[in-house]
Length: 148
Ligand SMILES: [Zn+2]
Image (cartoon, rainbow, N blue to C red; front, side):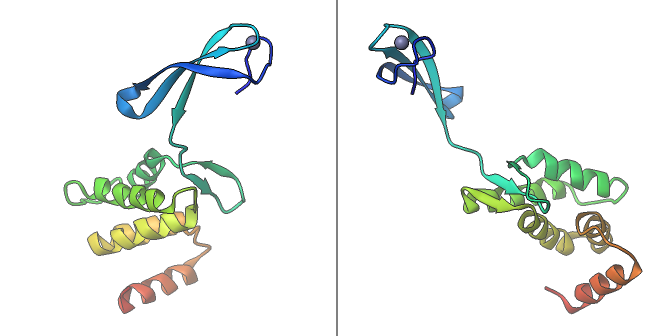
């Protein structure tokens, strides 16, 4: 860790304590060269989500929630259904560790939705899978009838 003042790389930790309700560790460091003190935070790196176009962004469960809510606004889903689907996405990201693809997340959420509401499943699938036309819907309907 370079000193922000003199760019020396010989710094020592003078204090270390939990921060953000234990989600992070806050450290005070001191530069041995110039004596400057500064603060660093250490926290678990978020799982990265690789999108279809190759872009990578930190996992954000709110994006799953918004996607579901937009696709399913007028479906009478059971109480807590969206929460449970978001949790499936979160669990996948946790298990994946460093990186997961947006496709994998979409699939695990869709699998959960299929068990809850078939119409909602088809609607979300049409957004998530970027259906090109009626043939995609027919294929998805056929898959639905076959079961998982
Ligand atoms: Zn320094």
